[in-house]
Length: 418
Image: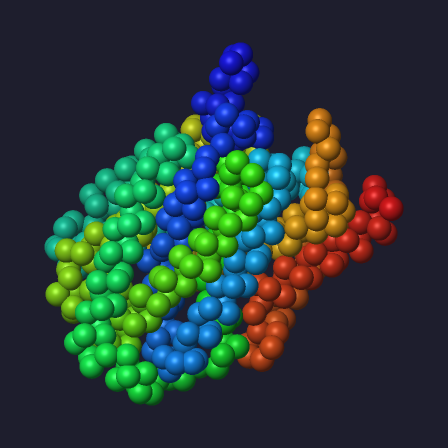
């Protein structure tokens, strides 16, 4: 290995393709993707669905429909990543241009740092409430530990996932079995009528919207796959199986206890210690992925080392965790709406414009105006999407709009390919 290769390896290939010698097995990628989708917020979303839908068939169909959509979307991005072994930000360079890619990288990085901070607070508040631990020290210590894991890189995220995924599965199944056992079984829960019913379309929109910005970052992790089959399969498993499980764990607990907060559900079931462990592992794995993705984005913008910008991002997210949690969750949700069109543009560029390949040695253009036009149109469509009905899944509307407008604009604007 020469000096240049060693430097890229040390920086987790933030700005280059992952070479064959450092690619990971199907099981490794699957574990990382499951760790990514095993998120406390998904359980709380499931809890919200559980209090608004009947168990069968409404809840089951809604959860599966939403996560199949996420699996398909993530699968396309996973295919592109495992074909090129490039991150989201490097793929964006080809779709948006070198200069143009800095805007989506900035949006992705800032949004993920924000969610990292919110995640740190999401762990600290229950520990403060349930165990009486002081809030500020818990925020600082947990933020520092999560940042340290990300600084080490993909291997450390994989190690954490190997510990967290089995533990979360065990605790989730335990909680769900407790909920069923203490409340008369499936038949009794199935008979519960929701107090505030929601429609199928709204339920799917909630399920898809809860994680589609995260699905946009799929290439950042799947680029380590050995081949396309492993990359796509691991992605689909993460979203259709992993995220669905989190929804069901949250929904069943909420239906049994009557609250959507996962930590409170587990505490009410006498699983306080298990609940805290589940919450910590859930947040740690997803927070690590969020900060890792933000580091790749900042590296694309600045050209600095991934580790350096990761420490900066983690420090900012930790310091402002409490402030972000109490003031900016709504703003971060709004920012997350801007991320799915990036994936739509990358998919259209890679699969249609480029015919599923990027030529070896091909240099990205400086700026591709078609991508910026498509992104702007997609954000407009997302904003005017209806609250109910067939077209109420705003992120999905923005993905399709971004892809279609990008391909049309690529033909019409200067610099586009014929």
